[in-house]
Length: 123
Image 1 (cartoon, helix red, strand yellow):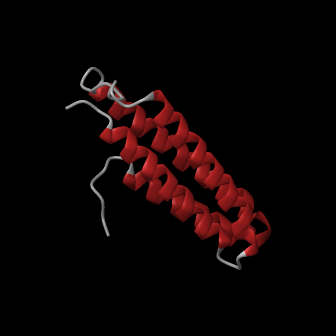
Image 2 (image 1 turned 135 degrees about the vertical axis):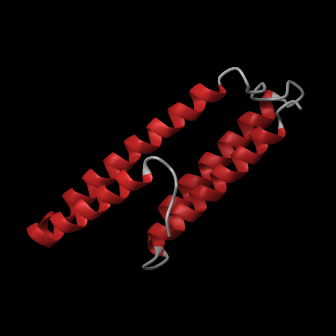
């Protein structure tokens, strides 16, 4: 699978270098290598997001429709946090795949909040 984005080859090179370093250094350095790679990926994502935000500056609609009550936004925020924290605490007791399930649960919470925010935008 190839990608035409400008940073994809550098990300691929970073991953290859990390895997090669893991082979050379052994499994005892695996956590450090993974953390370093993820930090670089995070920085690349931040850079790309900043570029997109800079390109779209001034083109964005107001974040929330004034008809959406502040109470609704507060209620959604509270419910989201309670569910998120509850799921994060409960899922480790559910079995081996709890990390994956926590990510899925939080992704769902984020998606609901994003949909709510997008639905409140003026058109």
